[in-house]
Figure 1 (cartoon, rainbow, N blue to C red):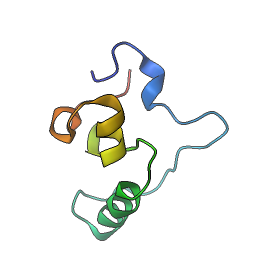
Figure 2 (cartoon, rainbow, N blue to C red):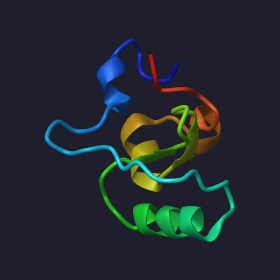
Figure 3 (cartoon, rainbow, N blue to C red):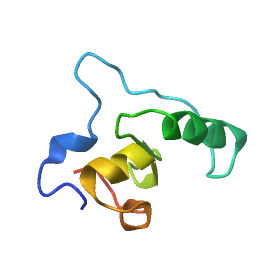
Figure 4 (spheres, one colour):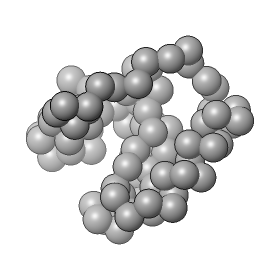
Length: 79
């Protein structure tokens, strides 16, 4: 686990619904577009698959948490 026991760090923000759609495999155009967009924002963000396994952590996430992208990739942020 990545979150030091704070299980709510990977849950959707209150008031915002999680996006439900057909899964896209890593490397697909929709996933690459999401990565490019999140890499440009200053908020720490993660991209997970349907099982909540981390596929990508943006640069702001790594700066804020001090975890590297390689350390969190593949970790599960679900309970």
